[in-house]
Length: 211
Ligand code: ADP
Ligand code: MG
Ligand code: MG
Image (cartoon, rainbow, N blue to C red; front, side, top):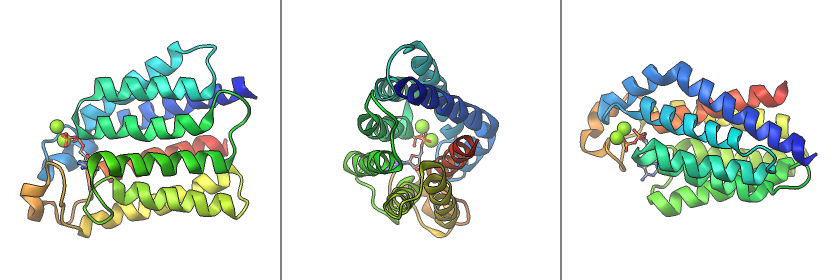
C-alpha cells in the first residue's frame, strides 16, 4: 500500500503540473489586474520542479516523495505563492507518512496543517482576498466530510466544490495582503489569482481520485 500511495502522490503532482500548464495564461492575466502578472509562470515553475523532485524520489514513500516535491516547489517557484505552496504540501506530506494507505482523515489533517502554516507564514486571514479564502473552506470541508465517514475521493470532491465557490466569491473582496493591496479597487470583480489556482488544482486532483 505504501508504494501505491507514493504512486498516487506522483500522479497528483502530474495533474497539478498539467492543470497549471493549461491555465498559465489565465492565471497571469488575473494576476495582472491588480498584481504583477507572474502568477501563471510562478506556479508553472513551482509545479514543474515539484513534479521533477517527486519523480526523482523513486522508491521513497508517499510522505517523503511529497516533502521533496514541496521543498522543490518553494525553492524554484519564487514569489509569495511559491513559498505558500511549499508550506501547504509540507503540511500534507507530514500527515501522509511513508507507510500504509493514507485515509481521508489523514489527508484532511494534512490540509488543515497546511492552511494553519500558510496563515502563520503569510499572516492573511479569511476575507483578505488571498488563497487563504479558498484553502480554509477546502480544509474545513475535507475535515467535515472525513468526520462524516466519507472516503477520500468523495470527501475531496465535495471539498473542491466548496473551494471553487469560495474562490469565485473572492471577486467581490478588496485585497488586504500582498501585491494587489495598493491596487485594491482595480481587483474588484476579479477573483484572487492564488485562490483561483488553488481551486483549479483541488478540482483536478478530485477528478484523479475519482478515477
Ligand atoms: P507574487 O505576489 O509574489 O507575485 P504570485 O503572483 O505567484 O506571487 O501569487 C500571488 C498570490 O499569492 C495572491 O493572489 C494570493 O493568493 C497569494 N498571497 C499573497 N500574499 C499572501 C499572504 N500574505 N498570505 C496568503 N496568500 C498570499
Ligand atoms: Mg504575482
Ligand atoms: Mg511576483
